[in-house]
Length: 489
Image 1 (cartoon, rainbow, N blue to C red):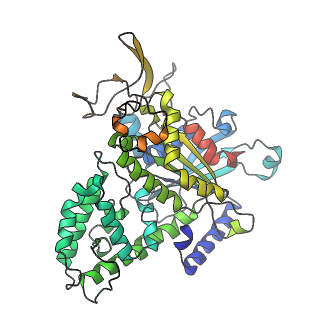
Image 2 (image 1 turned 180 degrees about the horizontal axis):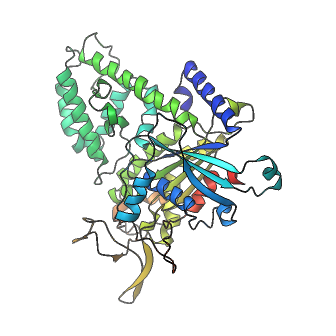
Image 3 (image 1 turned 30 degrees about the vertical axis):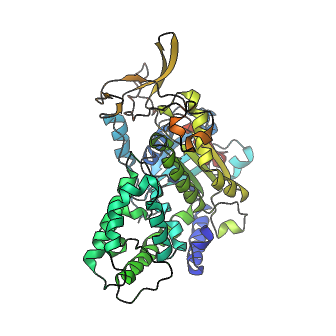
């Protein structure tokens, strides 16, 4: 898919940018790490915890450079891209550590440069390497990636697919108001700003309703309708699909022509620059996935998440180059797919969570692996909000997780106040990953109900000397080793 997203002039600009970046890297080695995922998957928490643990010497036993004591220090520097907002690391850490609240979700693209000074494990490398690597972390919403396939679709294609999705049982009631309004719009009538705005607002409301916890749907382009940023209210975001567009040509000056023009403007001025200026410049990528929310919502949400993950992974430029081609084109040679919030399950279910996420991304993983890209899947928690324990229920001993549920979270008739620590038996994930995608999954005896609630960030532990430890995690060290470990060898 990625090959169809750019023109010859786009590729020329990408090549020039790559050559400039490679030349600078001869003196200051760097790597661009993309961090994405659908909203509330944990991108902000992942970046904050990664940086916090490296700067403060966190417990990272599977991160070889840290384990062997070869990292002398890690620190933040000015980012290389002045036109990109800085990732507000300090604010996010204050929220996690001081207030014990989860930081605000990613709403737009941001960047942070973390520089690591280290001693190479190889005597040869120590002779020629400066022992310094800058990791440019690029944080961006996964919803924006779901826009990239639009570059290969006409307005008629986009409209047809939007109405097909809206007719699915899991979406039909949420889309009823927008679909009813669309039937009153006459595509061949004169363009009317008020009609365009009403349609766009109704379509946006439908997409936002799909995103709520009750449905937890994921395939919701255009992404900027959910996260408009500074484009809110602009003509490029004031359009909507129209019914019956297949085979029709727009009459100049008609509502159809207006919607089609704005759709094309959205692709030209919003989607394409995002790909060219950010996605095409990445070296490594992590995709964080909140499968818990979709599991809570049921098989339809899982199927929709599978569709979204497949489309997201298809948008990258995977592959391995060689010394010559790498000077002109960047390829993502490592992709990590991380199932987040593993701390919401007992460790006995972590392998099953990992298997479910691998099942979600099967097709895309096979395609990326064929290009030579290394792909891995991990169940992790960038910040561990719970600890494990056991409770006795009659003669049975149950494995539980212990933490402080967020205020308003519920299990059955119990509503939590946000201050009381409690032990919860979340249940076990099914042995077969395929089971959670089956239509009757929630009713099967061998697929018991899973109870997921959201927890507050943990209180940080202190040593006997009064030193506050870094943020606890599950397998953050494994993620670091896969993503950048080879560059610190």
